[in-house]
Image 1 (cartoon, rainbow, N blue to C red):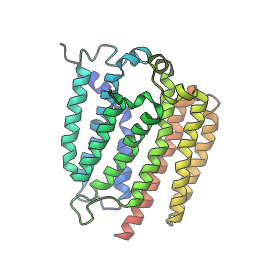
Image 2: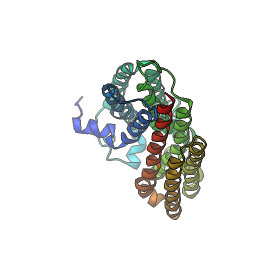
Image 3: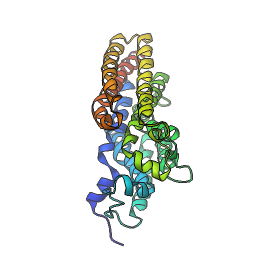
Image 4: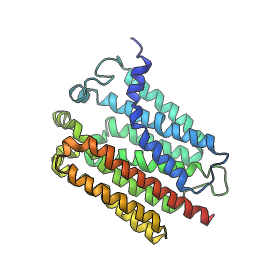
Length: 299
């Protein structure tokens, strides 16, 4: 059996998808309110774990178990095109899983457990018998929590490793991470618009398949917007008035972009991912700075 070229392996791991969990991890670091001094190596380990390792693993797992669907939707991908030959896609997914869990041991007990949880969801999303992606409600939830909640939690945990505050992060961090995970469910729905044809033929119940593109787009917009409204309200109640106002402005702009998206959802989903989602993740970091200030003052 021939060995895949390094370029094909890198394409299988999809570096373009690494940004969301790496950004969420950075949000967790900032939200902890702990000084960065003497923790740079842990932060670097966490960023590599969130992006190239765990997210990369999830992409390899997904492409292996989606290889038949990809023959219809995206035949140019490494596995259906033959650039990742034989069962190498599965072997890479297994190797990357083991490597990810080994690296996760450097982040302490909570860091390892968070990584393990994310890895379990990554396999459950794509692999039988669970194959959560067969239903857009469950599948998108698994991806959203892996992309936003788990790395945010891990980033906060990493900053308390070896300190007197070591342990479970502040409850406000957990609540906000969960809220942004809920919102990311809508982002995942928009990502499904590109594969409606193949999902329909292969019996995958993505939300655009179940609800139709127009209804799924409206649902995605509400799911992205409402958690941000809750975050704004929480920040106001916690005294972070300027941070709340900044996120409110970002949400208002997103609202305008959503109105355009809903006119041609399938065609404009990539455009919205480059504009509205950018504003969404910007709000995440603003929220992280607000929480970091609160936790710093409380320490």
